[in-house]
Length: 411
Image 1 (cartoon, one colour):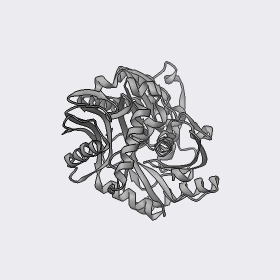
Image 2 (image 1 turned 180 degrees about the vertical axis):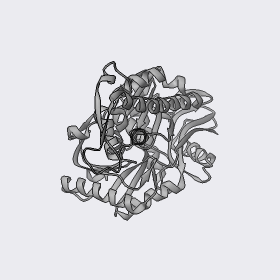
Image 3 (image 1 turned 45 degrees about the horizontal axis):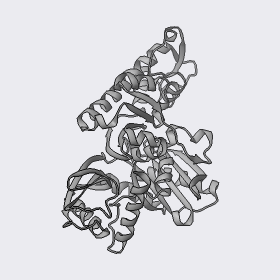
Image 4 (image 1 turned 30 degrees about the vertical axis):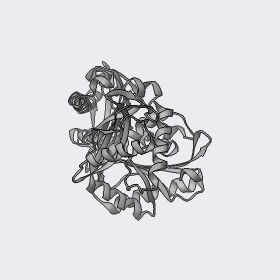
């Protein structure tokens, strides 16, 4: 796709499906087609109704194609389900004192691949995050260097094979080829983070409708990823149950009046709540805004406490530094940034897609960060060693050359 200058990103989320079509204009990416649709048939990022998901994907892609005046055949697709997990694989091979060559890189990467044992899980990403020579860490481009042993540390992200295959089938039923699968938090990081953040250490928290995804970036690469099964949709359900309101009205109340933190005026501000199942327009209740805030705040506190616990147990909390970037649709709720700063005890900002031309104001916010990141992933040919499809023998030299180019440009 990138060779023809046309790239597409397809974000299949729990609450919405969005599709961006873009053209490569030199070093920039210009969006020429946008489509988004309410998602049906997904729960917590996992597909529960394949026909409904297929219909949502078709509607979003069709809208983007009409706007772009192009037909999309291949797309980079995000993966938000499948319980993605990550670990680091480190291997070493002997180079017998000679200068490191492409064949040595190929050998050490093959050894790293052989060490992976996903079982019922499939590898989504396997990214070289650093090389070593004779135990010396921090080597970014090993070719031409001398030593006895060459090592590589690879960040491997895996996901359950069932949800991945379900997603692939739904996309293929829409007559689309999957050019690559990308976990949502990785894509959002590519779209929202600046270079200094990824170099010094940052935690990206992608607050989606069904799940909250976590990614830690350090020294220019993603070194850890995780997810917690709570999202903005759980807040909406809490409001619907707590106020006996229809789900559609609960979402509206959350958007218009919701806040993660209370204010002194909440007790005196009354809001109108339609009652579930009532057809009479006068069958409404009036409650103070403080009750709504009292429903929202505990759920968001629970979400950030889970994020904090996952970071503490990951072993990379110190590398993540004191910087957090919130993105995703649920991060737009009033007061979320301040609440996250309190619970996580870190500096927090809201992340939006940057360096992307052609986005309308309504699609340039945090809710579309993952879809925007898919375009960056496609445009920059972000180098990975293991894709969703196995490499052929003839592909390896070209892949190694791209690895060297990527390491020189990004480290």
